[in-house]
Length: 513
Image (tube, rainbow, N blue to C red; front, side):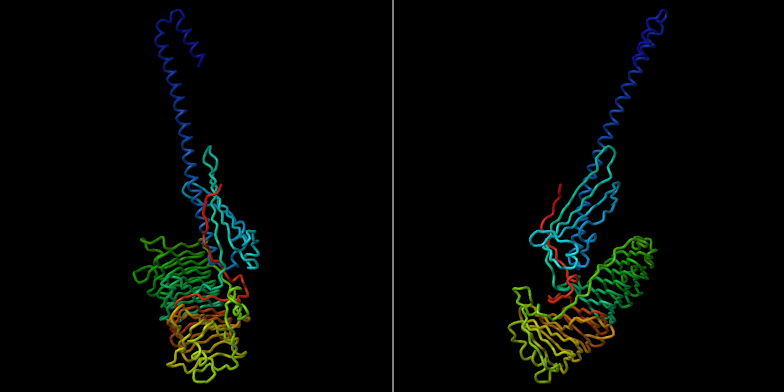
């Protein structure tokens, strides 16, 4: 620049340069204007880049804290009522593997950590959490979201934490549980939720087929079939294996997923009588009439990574001393009564049915009734008779129940009474029926029932109506009309604590430095 001006001045003062003087001045001014304009543009570009970088970083800070909080909320919801066996290192305990999430133009890396503490505030190792050898009292769930930095900016790093209080649950949280399979084979069957909720969940550690109405979700670690007469599912259908939806009118209010198989929807989702309110997502293919309908092309999503249904071990229950231990020491507080007679017929003096009919209305404490070894309990000649209970009653029969007389139970006014028909846990023998109900079982007016067997539950005929739960270590095979409203009963004596779960209560939520 200096040499150019010097050269122009020499030309202006050189002999005979008068005529070039005005042109030279004009050239100098033009060059100066260009230089200053260039500097101004460069300054504006620099400012714009800086402002864009700062605004981009502020955007990243916002999405980072939102994604960290969302990850924490997701982990907390997964811990709530999850079996202890699923709280394993790298899954729902300890350091969770990081993953990358794309939110708009931003790429975020999310790292998570879950630490459990006992009542004294000491950390609990993941192995102890998973097996239940140490009971956790609280947990801290943290997630850190780190953005890929925009130009000339540091990455946005935000950390969010939630502290939760944990309470170990001794009750069981499924309406129907079949450890090898579940077959609901009557189109009049209704599995309802408690108090109008949609929590009447049906779970199988094998295959599952459904007719009737399920006011909850369906979970199967094998394949799932929604039969022609499976009319309504209020929640999700989650399966590891294939999901087959047979053609006919039906409604599924949630999603249908298969983590390792295919989904065949047939005509589900194509009309007002064939409703798929959610989406269908599978590891394999998703086929059906709705998948090619232009108005709802987003219903079907095949060849994706899909979460498997939550796992749940079968609880191993025994009528041991925890049932009769005082409530103050964590027991059930039941009074033990041992029967020497196997007879449960209403027309037989000294039988179980007659004892319950005579003493049930005036019981002042919960009773655990132990039937003789080798005794299969059968309530007979119950027509026209109703057994009324003033307290909880647990009937333990190591050889099971074969109920033919359609017994009817009810509870006196006041708090709900619990009736347990329980077969002691043993190694499951799936060729053996542990509880069989012919002609039905009626539980009404302020009473709820838990039926538990390590073997097969079978109801071939009749009509049953009850609030409560059914748990079987083999198949649950329901061929009768079953009107079951889910209501969870407390239990004691669970031998495999990894089948229990924690109830989660949020204590605090915050962003941490």
